[in-house]
Length: 114
Image 1 (cartoon, helix red, strand yellow):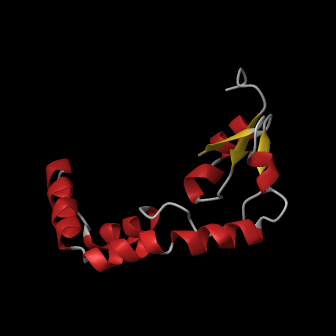
Image 2: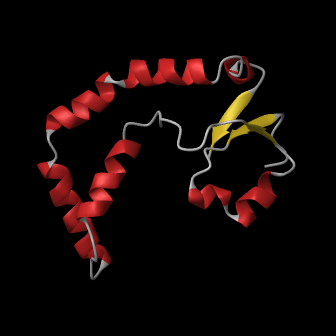
């Protein structure tokens, strides 16, 4: 990663990304400030929670896959459409919360989302 010209990493502070090995890897890079538990801009992130809560204790990878597929197929399409429809509001919320930071995301800088 050190070969990348001037990367800026977004650190969203979710548990796997705050592990010591992750933090040690990022020490030599610029990290974009990002509030803990910030509204996620990926609609799918809002689906993982309900999927995980319903797909409890699978006995095998095949069983987990079958359960997740079943849960996904049962998911109300209105829920998914509402997640996508809410994107403009969530983006606006991010811009307001991170006022002044968005210029860092314009060229020549770029951001890698972890």
